[in-house]
Length: 291
Image 1 (cartoon, one colour):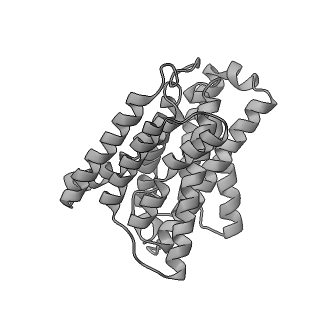
Image 2: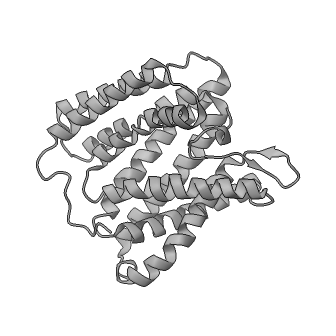
């Protein structure tokens, strides 16, 4: 399944002016980051200049890590959707929350047993919704490995973002992170010879919609939450995208989801409740500008 056919990071399939259907997935990721940066950068430059000019070497390094991980997540995820089933790719990329816990533990941060149990319950919900892909082929295995890597990169992006949000506001952080990510994806597009323009007006409108919904109202909201929640909880909340997409398809596209979607939603919510209820007092709060 091509990336443009689903609502993942590729978001939309683009059609060139001559009517030929194309789905330059990484190019779409570039444009949504570039457009978001163009919208956010002026506000950041005017209202958050003191934050941007006061960054030291370590802080700049964290920003580069976050942007690089985000670019790698987009590249691996969109390619995975071309090689394996959407169900398999979705389930594997949702291992982000598991990666977050593992990386946090390797960094010496304690992880309560009940938190791990809650994550297991939530991921069981993802499997109920997406199903288990039993396709065995070299192409599918490659796609699964890319989706697995995409989940890891998303975890690094989330953890680095949580660190950056300790000293940067949402506006400053997203403007910098999206801008750096756009530059990296542009390099990938040039090397991979992906079409960056020549799209139809309909395709550009679709791209603007993806930028507004998935980038500004998706990634930016989660980056905002990193000021008051741990990366573990934020990555767990992201799992709600899975049943959310199914329910939206039912509401707007008439694609009635199977009963398993509702059961999976209950499991994800139950896992989220367990994790949030067991977090230690003060773990989710940090001294940071929340705007």
